[in-house]
Length: 186
Image 1: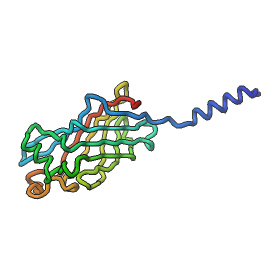
Image 2: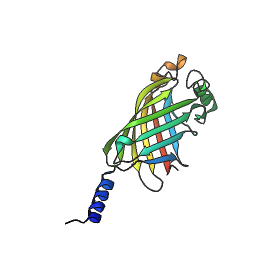
Image 3: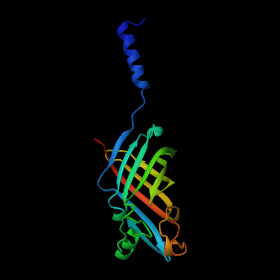
């Protein structure tokens, strides 16, 4: 037979074990990168957004509560070619004067097995929002890492209009890759 103290301890223990684990909240740390790759007249070029900022709430056991928010300052785009960089910031591409920031947000996550996941979210770019799926590997630890890839159809967002709309000159699909190193948010 249980006494009152033992019964109380059993009730408290069962309530605590039934409480779902809270997702950890992460902020981007040094060593993170957000890059893109495309072609111009058949020649591959790459670029990066050094000023991007990522916030992530994630627990692999509680995917329903996961959230990802990435802010991307478009004027920070660099490809190591000043003429191309100026064109990217201009009205035909990012129009960074009018649309200074792109944003990716995701609240739907799926397990792909092992430490592989997919984030189904929305990219807002040049005043247009479209669904984009980011597939990623999650490496937990003292400095967790999200390493992911997505494909963006630039014409869906009006990127590369005018003379640049020719997808034979610049393909419609742009490969985006990211490696985000995290710290626990305080």
